[in-house]
Image (tube, rainbow, N blue to C red; front, side, top):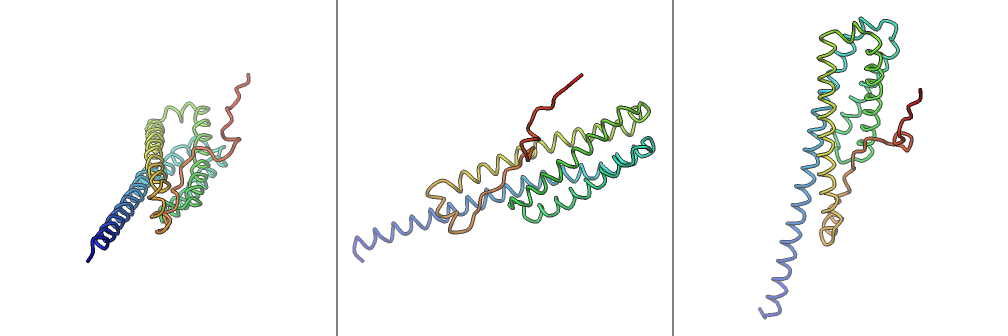
Length: 197
């Protein structure tokens, strides 16, 4: 073999090693996204498990607020279904969007329930209700931290998959952009609420 043949062979070997390295890095980053979503999923399950207990404690005190309790139960069912769909494909933007909308609906209905508890001093004073409310608040914070970790991993993956020359490997092997989780979905949700007296 001539010196040119060796140089071409060496160049091909370097390109192959680089391509394998770039592919492996993208796989690692994609797996980190799945892991980060797994952490969100753990906290969402915890939240979903708290909701029936919260509703049952409140049910005895809020007999006239059955519509609110039913809305919480329906929102929980939707959130469970969306979480299952997202769990099957954590990189699917449509499923992640559906999960975000379902969780926002659940959060809103839980917020209305918590506002109602303020109107019932005996419910507010109930030890079980206080414990469940504290646990729910703690879980909401954990969900926020898990979402931040997910978004950090998605950003790192998206950056790696869109920078040249790794972009070539990403496109060849079908690495699509990872969806970012957003706390709001529409312009109306982003508006600052007005307080009027």
